[in-house]
Length: 187
Image (cartoon, rainbow, N blue to C red; front, top):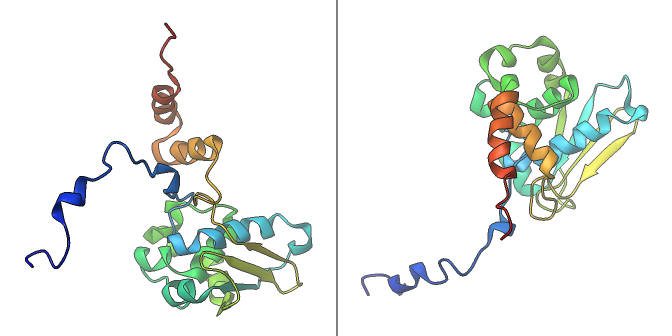
């Protein structure tokens, strides 16, 4: 019983014939995977005319996401990437979510810090895992059940290209995209 009942010969079973790539997730933003729906809901709400001028945010997360990110401080880069309050504040203040907001200089941003201190994060067990709801004091809210980039809501080619441009720069992203855009000539 050297393998605790496991069959080592099965490790390679299905290799090359079973493909599960359609079940992979590609995060749209660099924050925790548990906060991807939160970012989407925050950006959606930020664009809602009923939320204009409001700055106090209420974030509702399902049980597991709350356990991981609900009370996480943003005093370090890693903590900020997992902090529901910081991620919501950064997305709200800047209308985007990217790496610079989590670097030391980004963590010192006064507007983000001011809002992050006022973000109220609560657990909502009625929300399915991976979901998030964000509300403003005026009552407007946005809810996302499936995170962008999840198998249930895959990223579009345009969103992937935008992420690549942010990560690699416009010219390098164009070079890389050209590699994927080539199609073999038909015979």
